[in-house]
Amino acid sequence: MANEAKHNTGRQVLGWGILATFVAGFFYGPVGVWTGPVLGAWFIGTQRVRRGFVWVMVLTFVPMAIGNWRMVFRTGPVAGLEALVWMLAASAVAVAPLVVYRMVSAHLRGLVSTLPLPTAGVLVQVAALEWLPAKVTGLAFREAGWWNGALREIGREFGTAAVTFAVLWAAAIAVWMWNREAQAWKVAATAAIFAAALWSAAWVGRLEPAGAEARMAGVLICVCGVVVLSVWALADRMRERRSWARLTGNSAETVALLRSPGSLSPLHVEGRPGGEALVSAAGEKFPIRDGVPDFRTTEDLSGANGKYNHLYETIGGFYDDTQRVACALAGMDRDAYVMSYLGKLEVRPGDKVLETSVGTGLNFKYLPRDIRRYGLDLAWDMLANCKANLRR
Ligand SMILES: C[S@@+](CC[C@H](N)C(=O)[O-])C[C@H]1O[C@@H](n2cnc3c(N)ncnc32)[C@H](O)[C@@H]1O
Image (tube, rainbow, N blue to C red):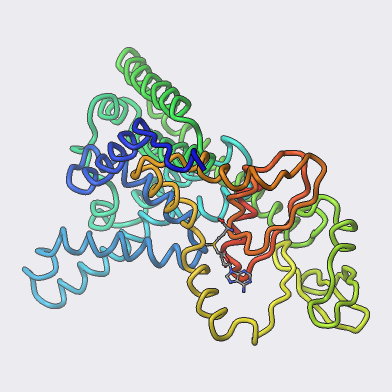
């Protein structure tokens, strides 16, 4: 296992540099205006919708309440309570685009999957500025003082909606690249193109400031964009729910490999209200949830299995990320390390490979492309992320 100890100093330095930038973002507004949305978009993408919403609300509300404690304590109890309600509303406004992004982008492909965040951001901002009191919007949106360089020019010439679009789109692209494990040079090239586009837009804006009509057209495009993307995502979700064949590629071949864990009898797919199920000749039924057959019983989820199920359901969303970050910070070449043992399996193109406790399917990417992959796991969230990884 000579590869095991291979050290990647470049990646380690980069890892610590990025970590330091994100930490700096908590204390220095002009950095935080970029890093905050990246963290928010990454985090909500690792969670189930409801849990993600609650956590991001808490993580937005608590710092807001701490930063504005004077509003709560300086005035009387009624005014203080009122201020807390504004803050809650402001948090909801700030979090709403992230929730739309979480629900929609998983159903879209490629760069299009990055668009729900900036378009929803513009929509929510415009609606909030129109209909909510300034007390709420003042808390919800970043201070213009935090914008620097091209961003300030863009705000001046094209309006705050353009700034929101640029910042949120950059965040969604960063998370998209992170999730696809883009190489460092691709990330650097994208950042350079993005910065160049931002400066050119600011420069063009100075030559010919956008009129009210052009600004309105931009907002309308965002509104239409978010509606079209949401409808597309909804249709995709319905198709995914309905069709097990769509996820397995060849459902007949996959079903033929499966047996009931109880009676060991063969299974077949039956459509039923609320979704499909795998059914055995003995009448056992195993629901197919979001394309994954669920063979677990209540007893399976007790004792040690119950404990580990809970653990991996909780960390499933960021299991891959913690591994990647830990390896990068330690300067460890994870690819070389994993290959030092997976390479010994001698998997060949055309093979069928089953990984028990497949987790998020991290090992699959180290195997030849031309194989059929099968995985089983106890934890639902690990499998949900495995599905997302395989799609990528
Ligand atoms: C440390 S993770 C490893 C994941 C993957 N094999 C990898 O190398 O990245 C362990 C996985 O085992 C799963 N697991 C734990 N107990 C299990 C059981 N009784 N049956 C199936 N999977 C189980 C967990 O849900 C978790 O996904």
